[in-house]
Length: 501
Image (cartoon, rainbow, N blue to C red; front, top):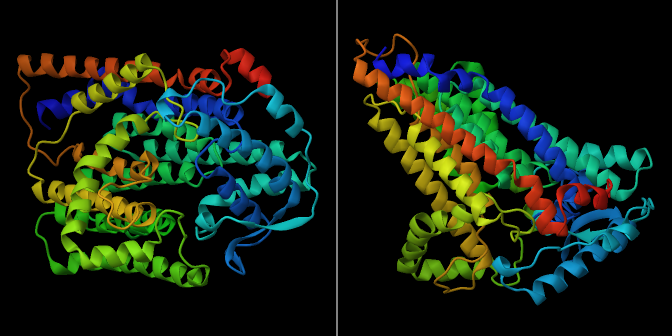
């Protein structure tokens, strides 16, 4: 093994890296549990629609229903008329009064607004509710939340207590998947742990959104791929089935992630002596993913496409077909310009995309992330085919997401992409960590370590640990940010104001 590899195995950064799964587990459980309490009801993007879908699933409705021109399902009457309306009316008024998301004052919710909602219970009388944007999603990523809603309703909990239980079960499931990903990940653990502890990721983990489970599932798929790539071998049958299943979950939840299916071919490209027969298992996995996506799309075909108020997707697609150069421009914008602009502030946003930490916290998070990315060792062996393939998959994934959102949320002929959010890009992020991989002992040339190289590597390890500490300091501010921005209170007072809602 070369000097860098041996030092990485023995340095302080590697010793801490071995315990990152446990560190993540402790930090994430505390922070997500706090955010489950501190985040006001439905103050996560589309959380009402996600909750309605989960309640539908909890009563056996695995596929959405159509009632005339409306798509949704039958939901308890109090959930809609008593809870949802009481929360959304003040939200709408607040957003109209302060249209600039960066200049909205603290205190979006008051204790007086929450008090009347705490005792509202299930009526067991249903009304048809529209939630077409989530009715088309598969049920798998909603199962923990659906269990929470069902348990809450069956045991006589209030609706808000049932929502809290649904959030908590979702956060437990998300943290368990994240812990498993870190346990399996052989390299790039620092990067994966930072991804899983991003404030945006933690806020989604602690919500009823399907994104809360989607993000750590992407991390788990990356970790299993890293195990194979680091060992420079092909998938075992079990590994291929696991990675195929995880990617299928991501892609059926969001079809624009379909370029991720090409990741199945990376171990073949990394292995020496490429033969066409070696591509057959990966090709079979690709067919499984495409087949599952196609089957689900057939099942929900009768529900129709989500009709956005700004742009019918059919009109936008027709315009792009008639103007191919415009399509090229949008793809370039959605690949090169929008992802960094959206991701930069979106790594630490909470609420309905309008709660940001102070600049000092952003500075801690940014400096920590930059240090982790720079000081995490990267394999220097000749893996250009794999690296080029990874970059191609990453870029096409960004382009597909941007194009899909453009077709849905921008009027025909618009030279901008409306509706983009960091959470749409985040599941693509872990797979770039595959560039930071170390090969197993015996797979590299051995060499004698020089004193100068040893000192440099040891310092790099200490700087990596320092960067991780700086990042963690920023992450630990997350509950305070939620308390301050949502309620304009200190942390203890905010917990008292929520009082389990």
